[in-house]
Length: 204
Image (cartoon, rainbow, N blue to C red; front, side):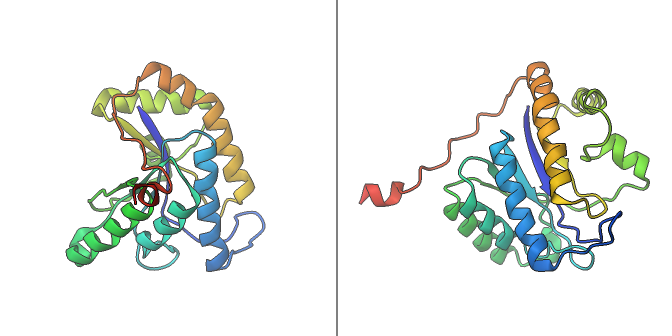
């Protein structure tokens, strides 16, 4: 199994301090989070699509393009693109551009967004990294038994959680969750290697 981190770029006040990031700072934080995700050995980073407050993810191609410029290995996902509300030609053009900028790392996922009805349902069945490492491992193993999926996304979007706390949660997951899951669920995805930087220039 492969593992990624996804975000819908919610921008809400910190539940403890009440501090609200500016849109500029929140978007920069997302790019830094993607850089950290790559450093920690995750396989992918995804940006979802939402239109309207409190989300800042109305333009995933722009965000993924910024992430592509700062990363080198991780696959870049749309999680997900709501094609029914968009111009499909423009979607194809935008994401083809991101794919070229990233060296062929873009993965386009199309679907719709179905919110969970309760916090317990989101914790038990959603991508949130909630609970002990053992609980998270058990959740993913049971989901894999039911669905047989080969790619699992996690989320650390939660009530304005500060970046330092998100980083702490991801480091714990990388150290105590991913190794056990990779042992239990060997990787079936033959992902291609990204195009090396400067390959186009070298070929001239």
